[in-house]
Length: 210
Image (cartoon, rainbow, N blue to C red):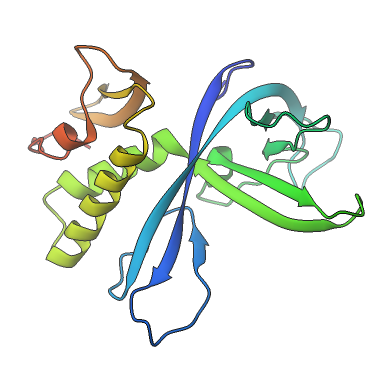
């Protein structure tokens, strides 16, 4: 399963601010940083505890055909009598024709004071998947513009600053697939064998990596 009961996971989102003071638009919220010029990306991280696993149906399928995995999380810092749940593919699972991004998204709904209506909805993305994606985009040689490369590098270093007190290191994982190796970055407890984000972004991309 992609998540384990009673295990804590990090999730992330980016708050997108216009750099120009002439633009008074409200900041946007995004799973991934925006790479266009004229904005700044501020990462926010949330630590959640997986507390429930359910078999759930497809959003548009037979409600009795519960073949997908859905999960519920709570924040360990939420000490209220009724903590807010953060849902991942629950109570139904949503998949696109070519995308399984829903497997990596948690959604939390903050209730209004009346206890019935929703005040706001929050969405965060799986931290490990996000860092792995950004790292590949940073070190692969097919990035052609300095602006995009610098934006991604800045985001990674900002994430490193956010987690500096969390005892998190990174492990470079390689999975053989035919003639290539599929790479990913796994956050783990920091030790002598793990790498920092600063070290990861200085790795030279090798032929045969994917």
